[in-house]
Image (cartoon, rainbow, N blue to C red; front, side, top):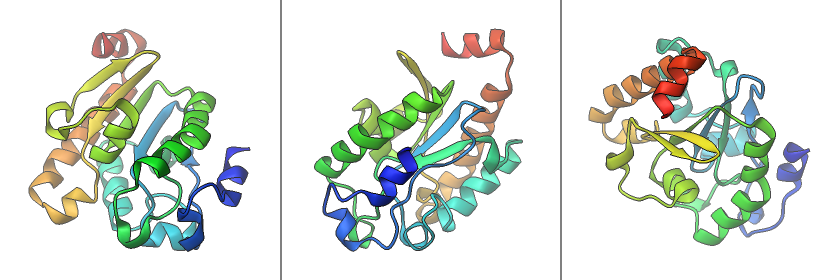
Length: 187
């Protein structure tokens, strides 16, 4: 099981400083996956993704969009907290992505993968310049990606909060759409 592998992982130096590894968490049957960058301090303490300030913003945005946290599967590109919340290195990203994240995506086979933030965008799709893709759906076979800011960005730039909430509302609408409408969004 992926969760057990993540918890025991010692493949990179991030494992030396962590309190807890943070495997993905949530609903694997509704086919919606949300992927952020890396655990923060609160996630490291508890071992669950998005439980700190950014998680509270994500939860509120989901609720206002008509979704609950248990409607989605939430994970990160990197499963252990980088020291001082620095951006994960390319090596750390490569290890976690190849060993765990790709397996999570394969297991869940999500209809939509919501990418939160520039690091996750670059890690998953190799794209830079977040603002160019934000609020858009990107089709990269076999997956469909919805791109938005990381909720932590709204803590530092309050102008992004409304945009983030609008994006999550749009994501919710896409998820709730029937097959015909969903195909229209993704074509």
